[in-house]
Length: 287
Image (cartoon, rainbow, N blue to C red; front, side, top):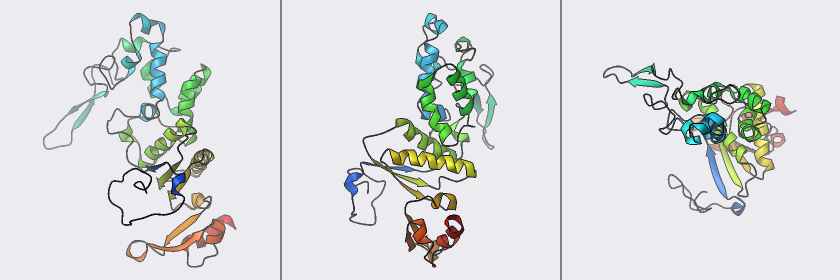
């Protein structure tokens, strides 16, 4: 598929051709549950690009201008404002030969990741560390109170996909696969209406989600659809499956006993196909 629209895949496919209205798709995005960043310094607020605006906000404060601090000084990815001892990690790692490495809180910054003088720069009595400790919900309320609409616009999609409880500066290494996947989804919602129509492929996006959060996920899907994109979901959750426009049920079982198209069609059509296990379970959901 990627090769057909002018891109490239990780490996050669098993088929020589693919047909259909492929010209209507400009891009393909596979949204899996892999971590959102390779570095432990990667977090939701950097991935969503909201941190760029937050850093600019702190750099615009009076004391920051007096001390000639720029937005880059409020980053823990480059030298300048970050703690020189832990390099913005907030902790130091002691490598052990025959045991697991030991992680200790940095004695200099006390886990705050920035130099003391930089933490003296505040916005409404909050320094950059205080903001990064906020959850998405808390941050939206805080910036809404102080009319920071640009920042709110980039944080809102994180709340919309059910991640209001996640801290802005929470390390990507502590996020579950499902949380990482929803952060990726939020990043596309932040971009808004793109001229390039994309086929989004999601791999089990409801993993670990509460029923109410599944509704938030669906609303995010609808936002993508309203912008003219297409969504394909690999899923077992019936509350999500029943909302699909079209279902392809593979089975009849898993592994060597599966892999065949057992049923396909709208949810109403699939429930009428007796050989489909999915259709049998869907019956009580839609009839």
